[in-house]
Image (cartoon, rainbow, N blue to C red; front, side):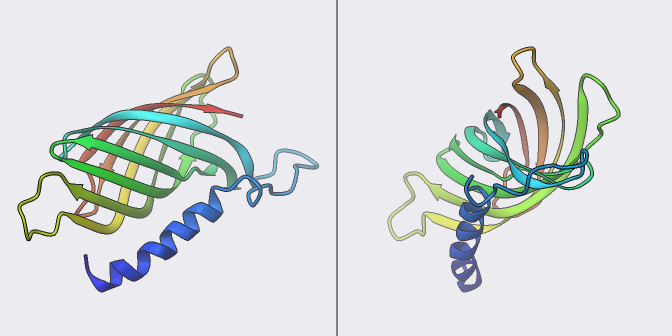
Length: 175
């Protein structure tokens, strides 16, 4: 882990904690129509599989509203296990939601954050962990279920050195 990454990690963690705290995300209420706003719109769970490293992952995300029409802010934290490693990833994700589609709404976007990797059973004297800046691209579809819960399926592409090459996952969001 380079010195630059060691200095950036606490700042990234602080940023993610601040942005994902409901009390801090309570933006103003909508008045006068559906104008974009940042604010607490709910949270959810996500699970999936990744490639290189080949892992099973799970995590949580926070729907923090829109800062422009159809441009959503949804940070997440995921933990993965498998392929002789454990990963922790926190991403501040921004997506564009194609709202004209009625039932299954496609979205595209990306995010940046951090990836922490811990190698299991590393030989003695070998550094068994690393933290790096993460860059992810994402594309997916979402729909609202009869219960009011949102369901989504997505494909992510890792663009950073320590990121998984691909991730395929599903998730649910509650208000």
